[in-house]
Image (cartoon, rainbow, N blue to C red):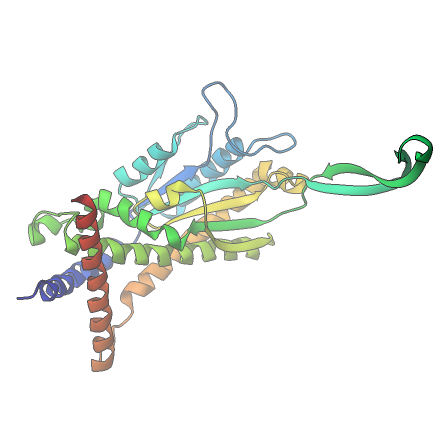
Length: 339
């Protein structure tokens, strides 16, 4: 029997595993990881952005505490894990390990934005500048009016919220994270039903690729819901975005993940809001309400009827065939490069 046909059969078997995983393990969220960005350095310094009188590290921690309380109250059945339970910094790699080790179903990172000062150039008049041309008797004095400018900066008026997911071009990194945390993708009785889990098998690579795509959609959905909630309370929403660089934890965590920029600490009005108890409570409430909407959306997605017909099945089979061809090519390439 051709190898490719065997892969297709394996994939079709795998699809039933995936459907079982979707309909049980994530019917509701079991564990949410809340990540307070940055933190105090061992020497007492701060790691995040700085405002006129406050620091990102402190705001992130305070908002996180409010968010944890709200989620615990509304969703007592959900376990909440914090990546840093104190005001001290936790290494990025450790944050991802905490999330993955606790089998999180969702990763939410809280941050504060900053914008560089706006640079200004103001004309203040002309200055006579004397120079000479020629030599000896031909030497002449030349006076030239040169414009003069004053350079100064003012605080950046940028304001509002942004919620990020990892960039689509980082999907391969997300896939690797999930393969490294293979047991997270299996249902509780996976081993009893299907035997040992091999993260290097074509079947599991297919599963991790599918889950990467699924997690990308779920992350984008939650990001949109967060921004929608901010808009409802009158905040300026700058929308959901894919981060092209940085935010390593978004692709290192084997679960749907978002990073919420709660406001601009470099804008004085927003800095005051971010440091106020009422502001922090409102931010936390918006994110909590977005989590509620996300849970409801997940439940609706998993109870939608599946309509099958010959045409859609043919399309799915063709997509599967092309998908497995890509996997096989990747394996050939990896094998060739390691010989």
